[in-house]
Image (spheres, rainbow, N blue to C red):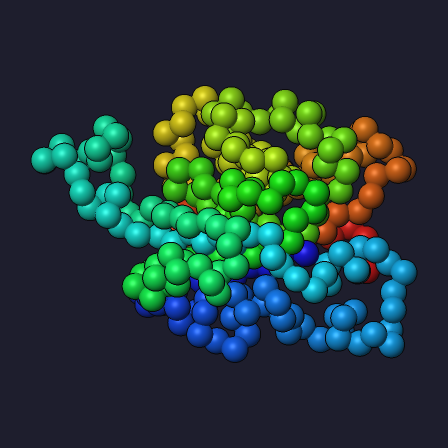
Length: 262
């Protein structure tokens, strides 16, 4: 299972190196070493036949790393006195920059340089354990839609079965923004579709929404996924394990959904 880290503060920035690399239990160290109690690999005398537990406790997260940090230059550098950025749109506040790699981050000089020289008040970071889709940077989290970032660990079960029907639920601009093939990115696109009320204008991705609206969109997205699984598979539908996080650079929402016993 993937692992992620999130940080937000209204006033206090963090240095990326201090939170992603320096700590003993940092996310980059957890690529090889996990630190939660009761994992299968840490107690070989307690084997389990539950393949979901086994999948969640996979030893290595070697399939990619991604970070999104929020910064102000996109809104700071405007065209004269027009208040507009170089693409012609008005942008205020923090916007996400991202770096994604399939190199081991401990050996990635670009990642380490970014971390040593970048501070931010809003950060999302993710290490990936692939669950069937290609190991390529576009499949790395976080996924960006304008000012909104989204990441996930876990699995939307039977995704290959529901994928076509799920895509038909996306707004056209959200569907066009999908670059990879993961269940996570498609759930992010469905979330942003609900959040923007299925707007056909890409500028809706730049809007700030209330935390209640963000929560409502997350509820609606998860419900839509489960409804598709039930409609297409009935009693054969498998349970889900969804640990979701999203931010617009001002607010951050963490959301957990599980519908099985383990």
